[in-house]
Length: 332
Ligand code: AQP
Image (cartoon, rainbow, N blue to C red; front, side, top):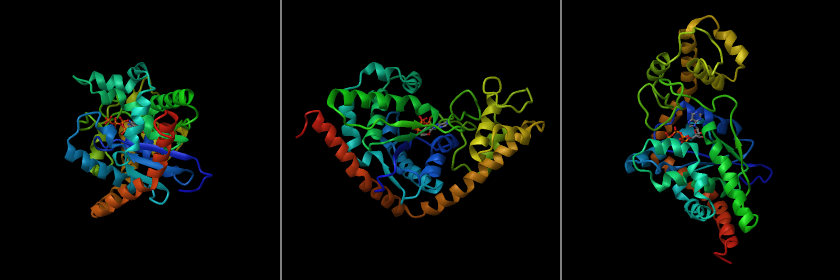
């Protein structure tokens, strides 16, 4: 972790439900692939999960599940600090400071806020403030790059705006981060509805492909995926969103070019495409599931990993918080 030549990466996933192939292809897979290039800080963002209603016992257990999935997917504890967001108080403390420099209009414009608020009868302050907490998460670690799916692009852009405004008002304090979005897999849609983002919350059967789903469940969800009646294999997002979604998943997993994939499936029908996607998804998830269940047998290992991760990066976060506090006139 002390290699000053390496740029720092920060990202996280909410333990707000069951992780799915969108979380994997949009985020986790790329963290694993690039972990040797960077100094890595990967958080389980449990405070973010609180912005929608959570059962405390389930949240606690899901935080451990996401931790293990990070490790089972291939993140190495040597190269990555892995910890729960709530275990480092500086995230909440910096959020307050950033709240005081962030116009509310910036937050009310966020697409994710508008989508989630529309689904709730009463909107909590935490939901509108979510992007400020995310900005604090990122800039506390002098982060250069934030690898996320497409839905988070707007929040990382807002993070830059907030950091820039703080630097303008109080002097150079924060590094401005850049977003890293994968070419394929950045916007996976539901199996049941290829116009809606695959998502953890509001999850119903046949919507998401969960990382811990057994092979027969994955097979059933993919074979029942919504397609169309055009009977044409093409990367046509507008006119064939269901087929596009399956091809996109296949491309993100295999790394093959569009031309290669079309050549492989052209003229053989949607059943054959679904079979190919099923095999690719199962082959990717089986080894992750095997490692997950092996590690899950030792709960002490998870606690030890979370503690070690937090202890490793807490000094970075506390230092940056103190610089911000000093620049705002809160300490000498
Ligand atoms: N469908 C997706 N396709 C590609 N990437 C995705 N990500 C999420 N969904 C997709 C990426 O996964 C990372 C973690 O996401 P998150 O936990 O912060 O929450 P989210 O984006 O709000 O995901 P969900 O599944 O929809 O959770 P809920 O329903 O609880 O809000 C991010 O990098 C995200 O881009």
